[in-house]
Length: 538
Image 1 (cartoon, rainbow, N blue to C red):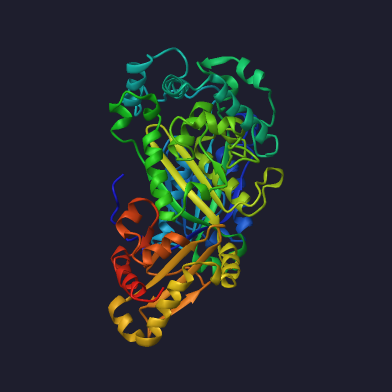
Image 2 (image 1 turned 180 degrees about the horizontal axis):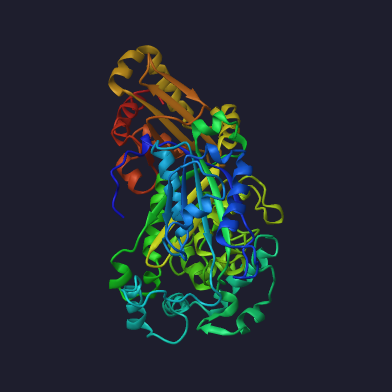
């Protein structure tokens, strides 16, 4: 995925301040559940959660797959007629998250302060089918990979594509059918605590493996159902959050990336790659890099388990475990409560259901509830970072990272403010402060920037130093809000070695020890701080 060339330091922070969704239903089960009604229910819940009125919403991004043009407008008209722009989006199963990322871009680009992201779907019963037969199928290239590898059979095409990816994983790594069944076992069990889930039944491993075979190795209880339902989120800028007193519930989208298919999806004759492995990996890598976070920071994950095979493959594509180690992650219990990650606490698509346009927004809602401590019996303990993955064949994938907004930052500052001396790096910043005290004006003239340093100690405590070498005679502050023209993120001992010249900056960057956000030109001036520290008596 090529770089956009956009300076990320100029982007505004974006927060989810309200979420809502309907219960996902078997198609046609409710007579009063046409898309305008379901969309109104989800969006009204989101606005009530945020405490905002429809008149405060400046734009609406609406996702659906099955419906005539401008269904988005018809749905939004249930909320009011204020003349706002309504953008309809369709990206197959990634439609809901596509509406979400579009809404986020409007805010981070300064085009709006409050945007509604809405998704819904009214589906037919049974497996997905091709709608148009007089034009090119958008997935013909993907189907050709199936034909060239395992061959096309009579089973539903989506089940063939993902099932064959599972077969390929079995052939390549020795994965067993029971590993896919264990994923379905977990997700069905998780769904018993989710009142929004289409199915809330727990099954035994034997019941899952012995349910009707759809396409080897997939059985019926390892496949998501078609569903009716809607999800919504209210996104806001930092100014909007502050002016409306929403700090305590604001969840920051710290990174969100979309990617589409790469040449390998069609050229490598790999069903795993044809169903989105490489584009997921690309989007995930960019998201973690831009957020300055690692996979180890993640506590809870909502990912696209349209079929159990895809959940296992996605563990590896997201980097939650190395390639081929998905079965070990499952067997160790590190994908559920008590393990390293809790994956699909909602029950995932397999149990919660999959109304295509709503799924990405339902994932967002679940993760916001988890971060706010509002997930009731599903609540994951000590959630700090949440990961979202939503994929649509054809193809598109969205990967996002969420953190608690203002309250978590304030708590972090209060904690770190009293623990400065526990960091080895503290001596470095005291030396920088000493230099600024002696000749601050000269440093400001030379550096012309505000540097934020995020340093993590061995016990996981984060310390934040902000070195202002841009204003007045400069200053060094510890335990303050992490804002700067450039942000440097490192472990404590690595930071000390870097500043003393014992660690090469370029090597540290490529080894992942040094992470940089914002103005890369300013980051190059770190050598000036290095030089000052190196000449000291440290």
